Length: 438
Image 1: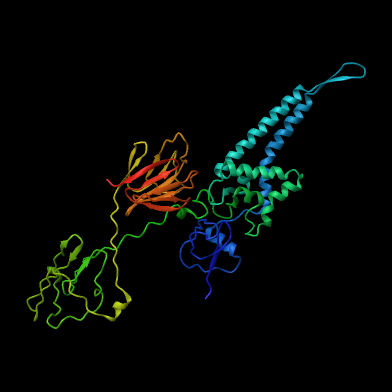
Image 2: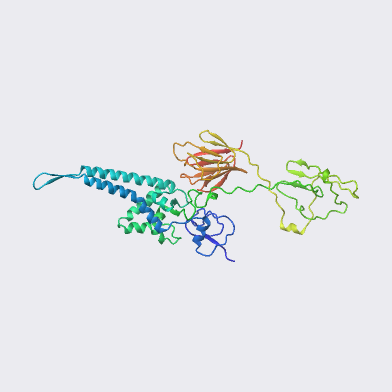
């Protein structure tokens, strides 16, 4: 029996289908758990198809860069032409002339400043949104290796390497821009992309990872909410022997045709005289059947009593049915280290200026002022559920961690979700808050 494999979206290492994290680079894969048969074709293409992502083709990357430099080139050419027309010559003597370059140098200075401002503007635009004029025209987006905005440093390193390649005129620059064709991992990264840890995606042929939660999609921010726990259901049918259901466990005889003792016969039911079950204890539900009709030959009395010892049955070897009662989920409070207190009831984002992704359902946006700027704009996603507070690091710059009540500190990696129980301290950047239950 062959085991289906899919590649890691970052390094291309073959992984078993359903693996959440790459065993080679530790990157979150974004694959859903469960068997996914791999179709025919390259394994790398299978992974990208499942994630609905498309790496940009080399020709599109080259054309996009040409479009990016075109406005600066046109502006520089126009200002240079105007500057040349301002050059004045004056005949000083029969053998010498005086050339006035003042106007030309002024226009050259204006051209240089305008070009610098233009490139700084698209540098920041690409760092924050993945867009440039060329990317916008060709439908491309530049991201980091997780599918989020690449950041200023990564775009600077990327552009610097392209400029250095220009030492070999034309050929060096072109080779650097199309170097992704030499990448054995699906032609996804050029040499400058590998150095800067960036990716370029074709958002017209596939999904835009920046606007849809990164490479793994929206599900990479937090685990899916578990289904509500099964609760005991009051049935109008009586159960023999005073069967009682306890929280978190069901009687192994329920659902089987259990043989009753000879002294006890099944009563005739009278639905019109059915009474509601009488709870004996908070965790125990006891079912009291209706009184038998007068015409019955035998009567049976089912009273609230402890359940008798279970009757042996061959199917017991296969285990018992477990009924899990859902954890009570109530509000939590978080106490910030600056004394601020906030009550949480569901989903919230915490940061200097938090903002949710498109289509993301967020109940609270908690802005936290940090003069040291160790807290990212959107640093944490938190969710109140079950035993405590689920904390997800939103690819923050300075990281996050959770210190449990016993003092054990656990780092929260980017995109990872961990549980902070009441009494735990959550660290985000250089700041922190305490999780308490009111």
